[in-house]
Length: 110
Ligand SMILES: [Zn+2]
Image (cartoon, helix red, strand yellow):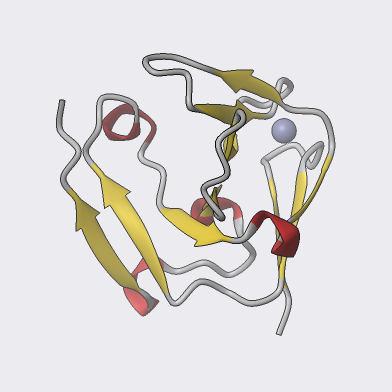
C-alpha cells in the first residue's frame, strides 16, 4: 500500500509504493547530528514534489536534500553514479513508528 509523507511545513511531499520494513540508524558524521532514519528505494519508485536544497560534502557522491522553508531533511540522491537506490528520511512518513520496524545500525563512523 502506498505511503506518503511530508516535511513539517508541507512544501516537500514524498510518495512511496510501500512503507519501509527496515530503516538505517547510521552513526556517520552527518547522521549522528541529523538523526535520520533512512529507508532505501529505487529512484523510479519515489515521488518527491516541492523545492529542496542539497548539501554536498566529502567525496561529493550524493546530495543530502532538505526543505528550504522548514529545514527538515527529506532524502538523499546520487549526483551521478547510479547506486540503484536513494535514501528517504523515514521520519517524515505518515504513521512512521520506529519501534514497529527493524532498525539496522550502520557503522560508518569516520
Ligand atoms: Zn518544509
